[in-house]
Amino acid sequence: MGRKMMDENRILQGFHPSGTDNRIYRQQPLIDCLYEKCNREHKKAFMDTAHKIFCFIVVPGSVFSWLTKGFSYLIVCCYCTLGAFPVGSVIKYVGYMERMTESIQTLLGIFGSFQENEKFLADYLNFFDIENDMYQGSLAVEKRSDKQFEISFRNVSLRYQGSSDFALKNISLNLRSGERVAVVGMNGSGKTTFVKLLCRLYDPTEGEIIMNDFNIRKYDYRQYLNLFSVVFQDYNLLAVPLGNNISCDASWDKEKAEGLLEEVGFGKRYREMPKGLETPIYRNFDTDGVEISGGEAQKIALARALYRDTPFIILDEPTAALDPIAEAEIYAKFDEIAGDKTTIYISHRLSSCRLCDRILVFHEGRIVQSGTHRELLADDTGKYYEMWHAQAQYYA
Ligand code: ADP
Image (cartoon, rainbow, N blue to C red; front, side, top):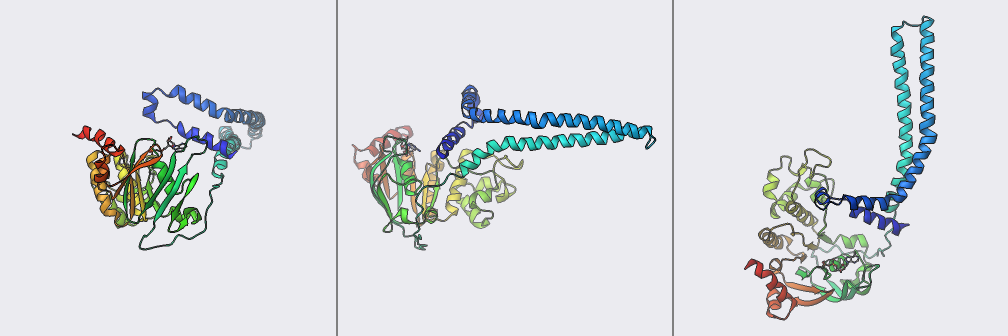
């Protein structure tokens, strides 16, 4: 049941259409078709429930309502005839009775909708109940103030579930504490998969990942995850105040958050926000909310990553929505802010990675080159040389 639910939800997620895509690509027939496919079962359940509601609630409810109405008219008229109140009050009393029967009908309708919604809600609740079957580990991650966490990949390969090909093949490397590492390569070469393995979002199919002498599987999973701040390509900000978005908590350290916003280049825009860190992002829940551009959202996501103060910071193409100059500025600044943290950048713009201590070049799931920008560029038969010159021609 769990797997089927996950598949269905993945499909549903995939067709939450954006208004512009929908119009430009005329996606409505496709969306209708997908909804039709996914909702067939729901539709049947809905029709069954609707039928039951009609038979057992709507029909008896309406009959009851009409009978009560007729009966109330009769009583009121009888009392009036017997002189209990003047004729003018008939309308008033009948009105009261009508209001009462309407309210009863509304109440019955609400009970009916509980039954109908329960079927849809059950899917979501079952989805949340899917258990994480990853081994959770129990070894405490040391709270090292010197941030000395060294991680080694030893012949690591990963094949995604249901896939026949390896996304990563035989990766071996050491990540030294405080190192600045850039990960470059073509689309689909395995860069994001490498980061996901590092953060233990997946366990390797083959090989092992060791941190300070122990396999990362042995560490308490939550504590291990707390070592990383990652800005993935598909990061999300929430429609809550800016301060909450940065701290990911109910409260925030104003000075720290403002300082970081300034450092990531969001300072000017921030100063224009009348409510400062209380300003809601997006207008989903608040008409005072502000809409932000893709580039601005990325800057906030960067500030959020830095706010957590973790020993590892990973940026998976976080600056794709920024222009090359803004990206270069942010990377230079980031280098300064990141201090002694181990930092891993994934970027398509090789110029941004030039200053890193080491550049790993991924190709078809393998690391095909590793070295500084200067070393890699010296090899004119290498992948890095080829990619560098392919990009350089656009800036020449
Ligand atoms: P990159 O970040 O370099 O663009 P990825 O690590 O995202 O590459 O992908 C590497 C390979 O793994 C690609 O062939 C991609 O299609 C595949 N892949 C990525 N994520 C999944 C997944 N969740 N399930 C199956 N295959 C995947």
